[in-house]
Image (cartoon, rainbow, N blue to C red; front, side):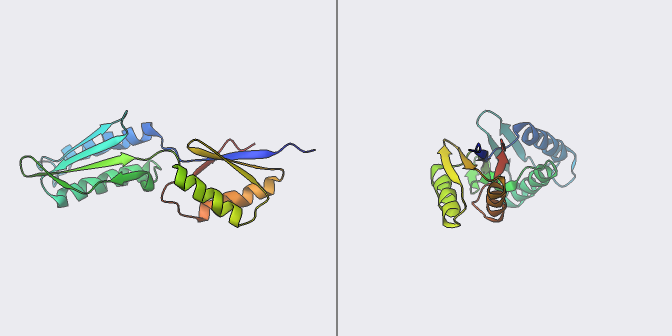
Length: 165
């Protein structure tokens, strides 16, 4: 009997690359002429995995967010992994917004992925293991079909496929 092959479906973000993009954005905030004296600030808490953006107006906040998004895309970080809150009024006529980095697959999303795979009638078994899914099959071709199928779907978060064996 052949041994089953498998792979994991995960949603992970390289925090070092996010930190590098943050550092580049802070440098650009100081150097760019239209943002230099705007009193806009961007802070990144690596342990809490969130950004705090403070700006004098929603327009300036959106400009800083655009700069950050550009830096993240250059570092191959999917923007689906960053969720921004609505801008809120802060002290001193400022606007504050927080951006949360989302890692891991939530239980509801994992069960939806599982249900979609079963609906396509692939000859695979799926196990939900915490914040990831493990997909098993005797056929490597079936696993490749599942990966191709999941790449076409949109679950609102970036999916990676690792531990393919």
